[in-house]
Amino acid sequence: MHEKIKKLSGLVDKLIEQNFKLKTESKSLRNSIMELRNKIERLEQDNQRLIINSSAKKNNE
Image 1: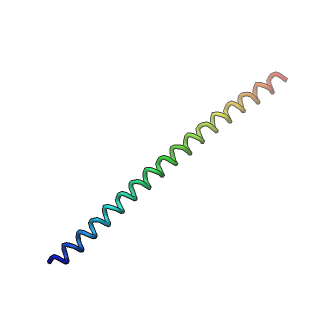
Image 2: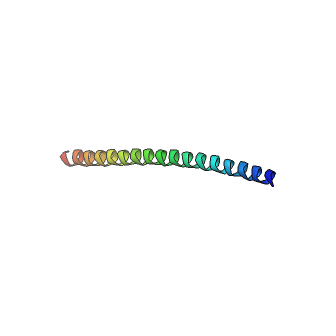
Image 3: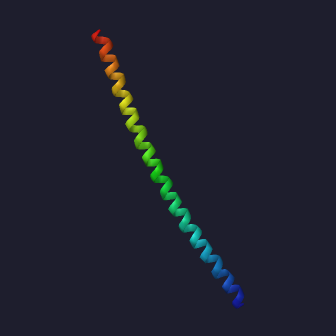
């Protein structure tokens, strides 16, 4: 019985460790996604400005 409790305790420890690793990895991935979304948003804004500037130059010619 003592051996079974020891094995179960070991398994619980491994699960806790895996859970922590997954949470850490998940948080890191969420941060990376947010950074990429911010970059995309900035690029879209830059593209809109370039389109507006390009249209304004064509209209002034």
